[in-house]
Length: 179
Figure 1 (tube, rainbow, N blue to C red):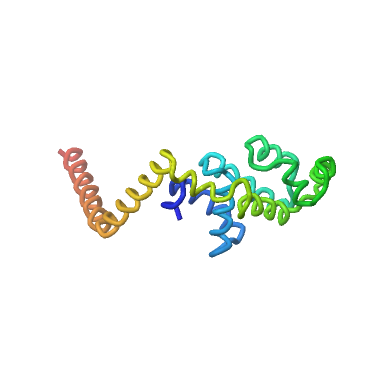
Figure 2 (figure 1 turned 60 degrees about the vertical axis):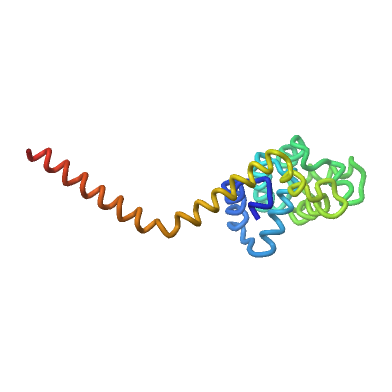
């Protein structure tokens, strides 16, 4: 998944940990990561913030005005998106938002609609992954995966060498101290 996105592993791991803490697993987890990645327009900073706010909204059970402000000022969701989802006017959507009537489930559906077929964020990660920055990120992930693949079988040898170096250093320190 990391190789196919404009995000690097540490960014994905941070958001994934938050989702897993709320019980997401398997296909649900992967679908949510895709929705959040597309809604963040493939921007790593927005992705991390959106992951955090998404879980805050889930924890409270509804979209609060302060969370809406964080998302709207970053171009992720607008009052018009809420109004469109509920098929109401902007004024009615504002009233619903300020009175805590936008549930987490509806917020999630709004994001899914914006990232699904025909939505303004549809396949944004894939589009962003083909930019220079997205390609640089993909290269970095590919190199890191290769490093781990090469290094994993060598870990026991490195551990043994470090343990021997520690023992040798301790012995030398004792020798110097005792003269």
